[in-house]
Length: 578
Image (cartoon, rainbow, N blue to C red; front, side, top):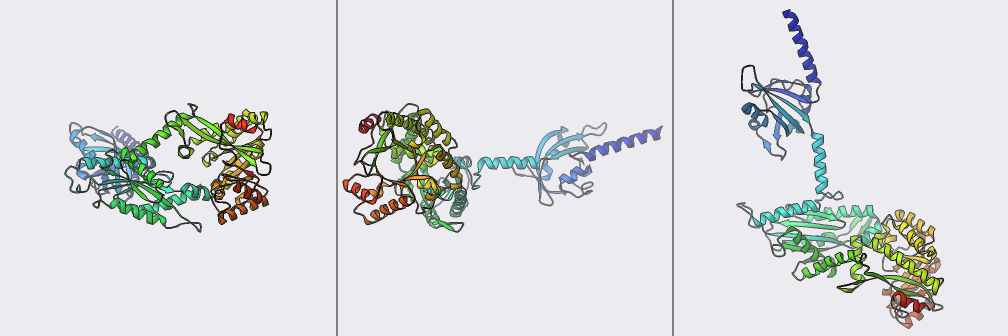
């Protein structure tokens, strides 16, 4: 009977050992003295210890160190598992990082149970069960990194920038007894915006543009000090947070260094590209004591740098407060303008150079704000572009222009063609084809009576991606013209690739003819080239009779300008037609 019981116990122990050894969880039995009494293979695997290498050794000899979740090292004698011997209470859900002897860090989730001998109140040993959660921790850290860093450049994003700025401001306000607080109150925020990057981006394509932004980020990182933060807010906007500098002129010196560094050409695929940068600087505590306000000050100074000729740096001054508020109000009011019917269209005729007859009309957007009055397009169009409001506004312009053109074609000018400007931002909208189609169908305007005016920069961008949209719109019957031709890029090869029917010579050339020889030569060359490609030419900004006569002799087909008519409201234009 005794042998039977012993055999049964052995079989039970074998089954128990088999179960324990098959677990994915690591199991360690440790004595009060810190000796490993038993373990399963998973424990050795998780802790990166050779088979048989744990049993019989003392805790602290099979790893380099143990760390808490915050990264701090926990002394061997203070390991949480040791508390169980003192309290007799289990510990559940401990999360620790173990640096193995190989140097590899393993994250574990650990439970510790006290083991007491019969008749004894205090634990004589502990049972530690733990799982490898390194994959989960890695995923959490990646998510945390993604939440705080820009995916394109790897730089801190706005969230991390504002966190560090807030921390710097708290230290500046409450330096405490730190020994390095002599200059802790020196804080500068520098707002950087690349000059004309959008034009370059449209030219070389967005993928190459991303490569260029990475190169810019690399150069900027090389400019800043070790304690500074360089962040990317998005697009071509970067921010530098500089803290604790001793020299009051540090921000200006850094601005000079950045201007010089970015002035050097960038090389991509064998081509050189030049960029400038406008920099605005806000300082604590002179300009603001709050992080968001300090960033706004730097932003306002950056816009002033752009208005001051670009490629320079400007410090915030109190007079820029009004400018910042104006721009904020402009954006806010523009969002309301479409809903409140404050936007309207004016129309400027296009004249047949040979007959003097009105053959077309360009729709021009206007904004009558109840408080500010008539807001110049040069002020609100860039804001609409930057905010994306140009997309819904542009759809409204198309709809209104098509409806009005149908009325004029029915009442006075059966062959009238209406031209509507399209921005690059609208061309990036996936709904553009359906927006144009809807405007034509709703109004009943024949597609050939609609001309979409685009810029040279748009054509010089990612042409392969644009071509299907051009083809689809051309298949509808819509025509395309290139606005402000001659002010963009010198390459003309794209004119043969895209379905362009009309070139509009920019007014900057027209207002200098016939006196300026260069403008005369360029205008004649554009007209000759367009003729060879089977395109019409429209001259913008014709204001003098002698300009008109020159353009007639040069072979220009259409003209537009104050010599013939200023932009008019719909009723006045209808009277002009009659």
